[in-house]
Amino acid sequence: MKVTDINSKVNPQFQEKHQRSIYKSLEDKHTTIEDVDIDDPLNAKMILNMGPQHPATHGVLRLVLQLRGETIEKTKLDIGYLHRGVEKIAENKTYQEFMPYTDRMDYLSPYSNNVALCLAVEKIASVEVPDRAQYIRMIGCELARISSHLLWLGTMVMDAGAISFFIWTFREREKIYDIMDQIAGHRFTVSHSRIGGVANDLTSDASAIIKEFITKFPQELKDWHGLLDRNRIFIDRNENVGVLETDKALDIGATGPVLRASGFAIDQRIITPYSKYDEVEFEVPTRLEGDNLARYFVRMEEMKESIRIIQQCLDKMPKGPIRSNNAKHTYPSKDEVYYSMEGMIHDFMMTDTGICPPAGAECYHAVESPKGELGYYIQSDGTGHPWRIKINTPSFRNLQVLENILDGEMVADTVVIIGGVDPVMGEADK
Amino acid sequence: MSLELNDTLQTLVDGLTENFSDKLIEVYQNSGDTFVRVEADSILEISKYLKEKQHFVFLCDVFGNDRYTSDERFEVVYNLMNLRTQTRVFIKVRVEEENPTLESVSSVWKAAGWNEREVYDMFGVRFENHPDLRRIFMPEDFEYFPMRKEFPLLGIPGSIELPNTTPDTE
Image (tube, rainbow over all chains, first blue to last red; front, side, top):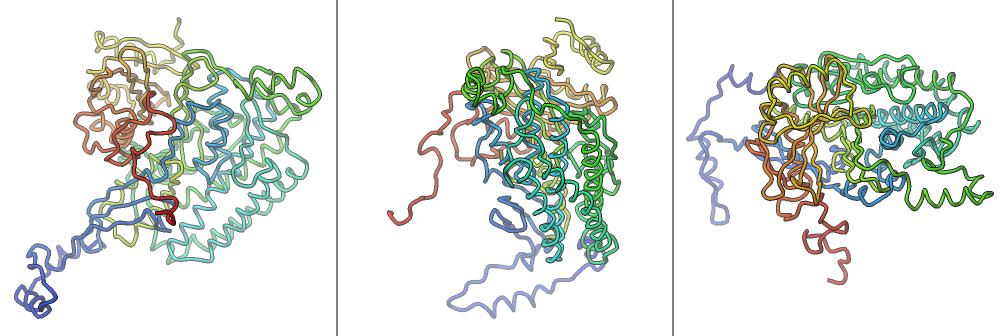
């Protein structure tokens, strides 16, 4: 029940004389008491600043909340504390050089970002990618999705009050870091994808630990469902909190799990199947309620579907090359670089100039990153540097949703709602 | 150049030709995406028409583009999606370098609010009737528009107040 509902029922009285006398008795030669505001006698109306340095805001997000008592009347978000101008940087780099910057955008799922950039460049420059590379990318993307959702789960449940849960999800994330280490040679900022393929093939060790992970992880998920699904405290904290109504969700521009929890089955993997997503079977989980609990169920089910996708990818993955064989499009393999003159020249040319899409070409390609639709718009002027790259980031759009759904909520629920929307500031601020 | 339009896009182009024949400048395709360029002064009417009559209810993105030496220097692109057929279309408008101004579409799609603020912040294109047109990433007292091509990659020294990195030497 909200405070406004209570107020309308009980119609609280304010003993003006009584309050004034208390205030007056406080007054002495050191203290001056301001006159009592008849409309707001208890100074219930205040502006509260949260962040940017606040552990519950998941980064450098600043909220300015206008409160009346414990109710939020109006919210303004202040973002930009992590603005590094990556779009400007991209205009001065070759396409491949820009990839490590994408790792640092949504730093919770670097693999999806790499793949999003690669797919957009491949679309604009018409680069063919071998099947095996596409399956490796899908495995990487789905592992990144699980990794990102695990962080969300841990921190969101911690925001709701359960500290130990965070440790359990991070134990599983640690396993994904180990897998990424085996796949790409890096644990965190992987930069494994290359324009025209991937950097290196899956080793047998890597396949083995991926298989081990996907056999053991469903049991963990089941345990977590068992702990949270019927947990009274968890449900009370999340049900009917931060509701985004179905008819508003599209207008405000929600994306990803936030949109799917409000009843729209919009998923780029279904709308414009990239890589081999049209050849694997998976469901797009949706809920109708639009509250924080719905977002919890959507993300939990997405993790389950990710495991299904990885399983199918491992089964279907053909043998073959992992990078396109066209030296004008992609880096040659290290064998060629070390043992042939042409290989070395091509390697040098790729590093120096890189891939050059036709002048005036422009394209947009979106992937479904863990946070939602991650799109790259590229405009080329025919050189190796893009004329313009615009990154359509899901966190930016979901933060705009956050600004709208916080109005009318209790201030204590703010952290849970931020946790449920799951923004990453590296991505929102670009 | 021939166009390969699916049913939704064909209906869109036909509808625009019929209702806004003097406002439609060009329709072209590139790398599989469809771009429609219209007159800048009609963007609000066309947005309303697209949302209400053509079911382009989902605004995915609004972004700016600097064409630098060309006439009508700044370009603003609206990335729209029709949810019935899940078709994407890009609506483009161009504005002059001197005092670039556009009508805000945030009354049609609320989602445009932040995106238009970003375009304003990065390129200096002002949006009329925007509910809250402030800079979004840069501080309000910053005087430049960083995504314009003439803005140097290393920034302008002294343009933004930064904390002292060597506190001992102060």
